[in-house]
Image (cartoon, rainbow, N blue to C red; front, side, top):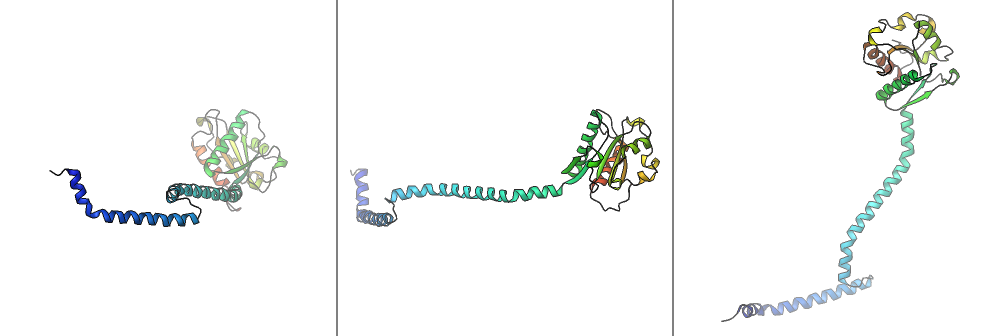
Length: 237
């Protein structure tokens, strides 16, 4: 009986000329390709194929490097302009006070936190003396009320060169139940107080800071409204 191997050879025998022709054709084609590759400095078809397999990865790396270099180049060009733009967008504010000690430092920190949370970037300038004040920039004067409001307010704004561009913050260092019920601006009727851009009452205690109360709700709204860029003829509340 004919075994399987002999049977397979018998079946494939008619196709042997075709197989030989294909092998010869492949050899001729490979030879032609190799001759062409040699003209371009390539050794053989196998090396070229292996090289082409690696090239896409190298191309990706080169493209990534090019993108990174372009991004870095763009950043070098844009960053100075961005810094200028951010600086231009900052709200300039001045702070000036005559008190010393931990309490006024906590008050200053609280005021800055409130305004930064409201407006974002702010360019604060702490004036050490009245002569340091820029009359064209809004001035905030926090003053702790210790005796009579009028006397404290007068002392706070003494020698201030720009009252029309000044917000006086009268800080009541008391618990909510001990706060005055009347706005200080209603009792400060002298012209020197009327010249001020804003008179604002705020409540503060060490430990609680500017705590939640009606006075602070009104006062913080008034302070933020005052610091927001507005026309010069705004009416003081």
